[in-house]
Amino acid sequence: MPKETIEVIVTELDHEEDWRRMRATATCLKGGPNVVALVIEAMKTGAPDYQVEAARMLARIRDPQAGVPLVELMQGENESVREAVVDSLEQMAGIVNEETAAALVELLKHETLRPSVAKLLGVIPTSIGPLTVMLKDPDEEARVNAARILDHLLDPRSADALVDAMGDPALCDLTIGTLKKLSAIRDRIDEVMDELRDVEESELREGARQEAVHKLHPIGRPSVEILIEYLEDDDWVVREAAADVLGKIGDVRAVEPLIDRLKRDKDTGVKELATKGLGLIGDARPVPLLIDMIPIKPLRVLAVEALEKIKDVEALRPYAEVFKKMKNDRDGLVSYNSGVIIDKLEAAAAQMDETQWAEKEQVNG
Image (cartoon, rainbow, N blue to C red):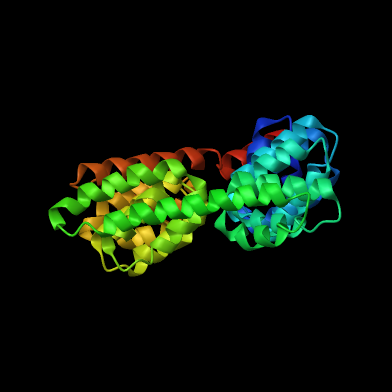
């Protein structure tokens, strides 16, 4: 039997035979971005069951080029496909580019899709720019919907556009209210950080930091951009508080700033809390840096714990030998978490046994 091409294999994500579905899954995951275009093409003309599985697969691969095709698929009539696309885009929120966000913002004009789109825009960091552009849309209803979502997001990046929109009679009251909320959030965060900075006694600073975190954490996502600014503060205890809260909020916007702190901050406490925060967020981008942190004694346990929390286990596979060695580490936490990672990798590998598929293909051939 001639060997099937990758173009054929990726169309079998919904095949009735288990081994073919598993082969298609493994092929897509191993191919990564290289197979995204093939899955997208097959998804455009595939049956609804295939479109559901393709959307789920694209979310696992996490390639930004899948964003716009998924948004286009969302406009179809099949409810199961729509739900799968919404779930997939939500999982991809941290890597969705502005082109995809802009395509979603345009769907705010679609009454049926508006609730799902609004929910997605609320978790996609790149949505702020397209939403502020829509504040100038000729359609009054579209402008109002954009302003309402920006009021929900309370992101300081929207402030300038909201000020400009105050001259629009349809938006004036709403934008003024949003700007007042943004100002109150900024004032509250500044107040808490100023109080923390004023604590000079070294023995009191840790308790003050914890109290500041307790006050700031409930603000949630609207505080993210401001807290990222505070990562650059001259006072180490303020940077520690910012890193701590950002990790607890878990917003993907904090990933790159926390990576930067981990790379270049001179304060060990800031590095420790940046490491913890990256683990809590679970994004795969800091994996190589976390691996590099393992030999550093104060960060060793925290780095391994953070790696165990990474959501995309395949990002850890290149370092499997490192984890195997650490499985016998004298530190119990290092050993335990390394063992958990190895178990995850083995479980994933069990679904990608190409030898088994080849045997099945011969039998079925």
